[in-house]
Image (cartoon, rainbow, N blue to C red):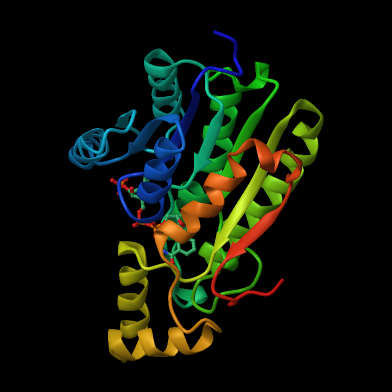
Length: 262
Ligand SMILES: NC(=O)c1ccc[n+]([C@@H]2O[C@H](COP(=O)([O-])OP(=O)(O)OC[C@H]3O[C@@H](n4cnc5c(N)ncnc54)[C@H](OP(=O)(O)O)[C@@H]3O)[C@@H](O)[C@H]2O)c1
């Protein structure tokens, strides 16, 4: 079978919840073989079963994207199961912040490690161990955030990490452009996921407010008047993974109901 006819292999980090789960499901529905990862073994097993029960070609293994060794083992497991990698979706991430003067080193480093260093680690490993470097066509899609383009109050480490992801994306996109491997960032605004709920809890505590009041305040900032859905974010990832998107590279594209217009 020629490389062109073979089903494409995609790896998705953080695919047991929210945006990552929607991305894994959509890519599998779009005829990819999808290898997923997250830290909770129970959630990885449950998600693999959920998607396999939907008739999708999905497998997975535990990975903490903060560990170079675990990332290497995970990418090798994906190759062993499905073959060399065509599509990488760097989605795993965490929220985190607070009054900047009160942020300790541990929180700062963990947000940067989880959201930014991980994107370098997983991408490098996919290019090398995953065989992506040898391909004439590939896709690297990084889930950044509108916080990667504008500052978010009480979110300095998060904003810094996501600006870093956008910068990494643009640099690597230009570097790999002649190879047929595109590199893009998808920048969600507010998306209704478990992370979004935790973020509202954090702001409610910081502003001595309620989660409902914070939700109302956030929705009022979004021109569309509502949060985006994980499926709406996944839709752009699915498009970027397609052949038609071959000339889109080094971009950071928003899915945010108009929240960011830059
Ligand atoms: N929701 C939003 O409003 C929003 C907006 C803009 C950008 N984003 C970005 O979109 C991405 C997904 O967010 P989400 O809202 O879908 O979050 P979520 O519902 O909290 O899901 C996060 C996923 O990442 C995994 N994960 C977290 N830390 C990990 C680690 N160290 N190693 C491996 N996997 C890890 C989680 O599983 P385990 O905990 O089991 O590891 C889970 O599968 C993140 O990068 C986030 O920054 C979200």
